[in-house]
Amino acid sequence: MGRLARYTVLKWAVFGLVLAMPLQSMAEVSSDLVVRYLLATVHAFRTVYVENIMERVSQVGIQPKEEWMKDDHAIMLPFQFVKVAGQEMKSLVKNVDVGLVSLTPLYSANFPKTEAEVAALKQLMADPKLKVLTFTDGKVTKGLAADFAIEQSCVDCHNHHPNSIKKDLKNGDLMGAIVIRLRK
Image (cartoon, rainbow, N blue to C red; front, side, top):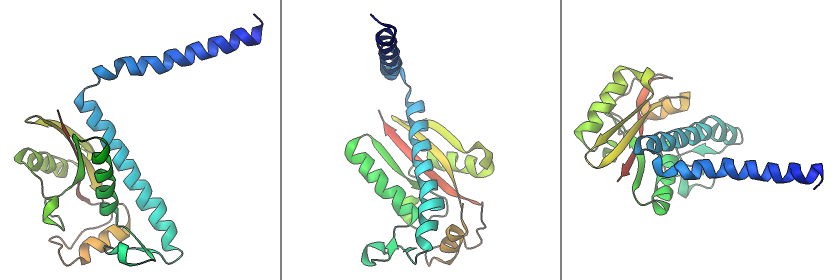
């Protein structure tokens, strides 16, 4: 066997080992780690949506609107993006809920669902540097990722929304959290 053939066989063997190692340990992955991965993914996609997509399309006259489906020159708001992505995820993985929670939400559906969620949200609010909290609430592993006002448009929308309880948000303020609920 020539050097190139040996190299190719070795390369594919290493690739197979690298691929097999995570698959072997997947059964050992904790619910806490799964929740952290999901939070990181949803948070990253939401941030990219706000900082890149919304910014770019606004330059050509397309604005995020709550009633975006009725307007050909509108896109969904970030919270709608998270909710729609969460619904899509739930259609694929039945035991996962993705959403947003806040102590001062614009919509009552975004209030925390349990006292444990309230306590975790209050802990995040008291120390936003935590950024992520995970915990078990009965048979559900939950995680909260801090949801900051990352653009002035977030602040303006929340401060001027007719349902807003809190009208003094500033850029960078913690508004609530992205929540993952993973049922066992």
